[in-house]
Image 1 (cartoon, rainbow, N blue to C red):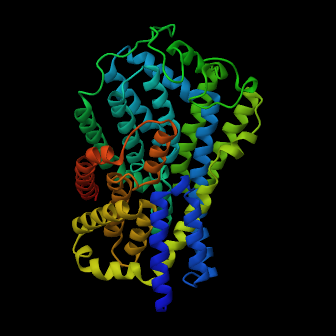
Image 2: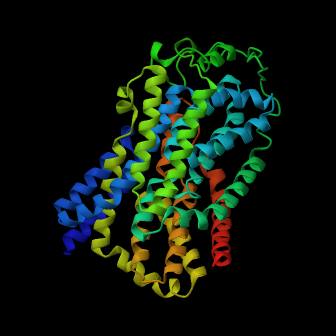
Image 3: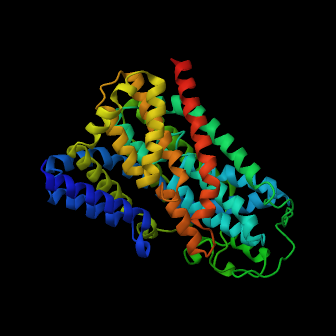
Length: 473
């Protein structure tokens, strides 16, 4: 590589990272990633053969994530999530504390059964809807919104299939989903549980003790009018009514009279059964050597067919709602990272960290967990986790140490990255949702919580990972 390629590669990467974090004019994240990848190809930093390697690594993971997003869109159009949200408020029975824990559980399950980005896109509008229905003040809304976002994003760590970066990195190091979950589920879930307890402790005074309570019939006292609905009864009816085939496409904040979905238990059972079967299928496929994307596409197709039968609704709307740009984003980012690998970045990391990493599992876990945390909060976690994973493959470590370093790599990129608002795509999507719905929340307010919460959670998860792996071995 000549000096022009080296300087050009560094500049292009820096500009790409800045545009991903800044996103001027709500720029789609695929644009800077795709443009950066093209420039790397033009400069000769990556070759045509490199592109084929990138496609082989990225395509399956991106298709798997897209299939789970499609499944979440189908379930949302059926009305399951809004039905769930209504019942969360109802079963909170006027307790703000119960509402907090129920919403956290919703966000956790959404990420475990789908993925972190899809969880943010679905649950954030639902939580916004709920806090407005309950006429909560801004400082009372923050505990629900921020806690939900942090839990939804962090919960991509316990299961490898809940995050695009995790899936791509799994392909690089050759780790299967069952082994990943065996090592990661317990320590990361324990860390996330403690993180949630700390969030509750931090917001305990802001969480209202009493909220508006629905009775079994769904009736509630009428609060003062809000900007978007005249009473919670109208908004509640929005979640429980007529078939989608007879109405316009749903948006969580549209006027109440435009959406009243109807559900029955048999449909709920079938839909949830398909989701569970797909999730179990991912692990079975990983063990049997079946491509994960085949399982994801099958699950999505079954849900689409079920909706077509139930509501006579074709898949046409899914083409519009599915974020196809994820394919370009993942491909472009990995082309850039592969180019940096060709420029010698991963070799430089290996030379710098090599002696310490080779000294033992504890050092490997600590170094890669901290390195990925720093990198993710400086330039976003997706390129960071790919750089870290490629670096791990250059150390020529024994299998146990390599897998331990990789798992610490994931904890740093999935959980450690939450310190800064731009550390993950999910965090950026969350802030975009808040701006879209005119919820005032500054980066400073975000940092006032994450600057102490996430390092503590990271330390707990990394310590738990090391202890758990050594115990299993």
